[in-house]
Image (cartoon, rainbow, N blue to C red; front, side, top):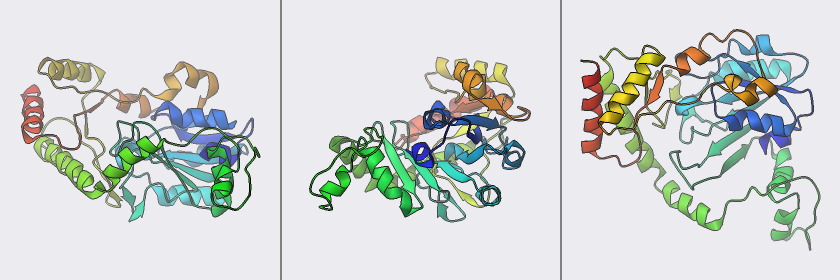
Length: 311
């Protein structure tokens, strides 16, 4: 919906990181644009704000930032670049519900913000999400896009006596059951958030002296405990670690394979500049079990098992 509201046309370019899920790039293609990847920062795994400007051309229309693991991108500089070049900013805050940047909620800083309530997120309704719009001028068309291209929302508000087809659109409405499942969690949002943060901190405190790299949280960012990852020396050590943890019954998984290395990425997109960190860092990263309500016994088992790997 965010991409459709931006009205990308053929030839338009959108800058984004390659280290993200396919949805981020796919929506640019569906909207009519071309994804242009730039390298990431190794400390946060977010888009490198210092690589964005060099990728801007006369065809660039937007910057798509991804707040990886619920940790914010360097939004002040990105906003400043966007203003100077008259570009829109779309925030992929899929993992960022309850996270902030300088006390501003992620997803509310750019022109559009996108939350996910997929089953893997902190708050879930199975599938679906939320679109946050900072300019009310887009609200009416967003409602139409959401309602299969009709002005049905106006009809429900009593603004028109019948609704009709007025624009392109799709079916973006969650079911009542999905919404109810999510609503129960949102009523306990702080409790869930605090529980995840406590687990995240337990991992951090337990591993801070081990020979592996831990997540880095910039001082201006407050995260939401979406995930806890470690970075091993290289792909070979990570593979050994996954096999080791699996042997003891602990599921540890890596994350995104950079999109520019995927078949669709090679076909539809391009990478601007050098891939210094995107592939290298993605091959080192591994996620540990982290979910609301993990028991102390399970948490301690993961911690003790992981520590023994480095003995």
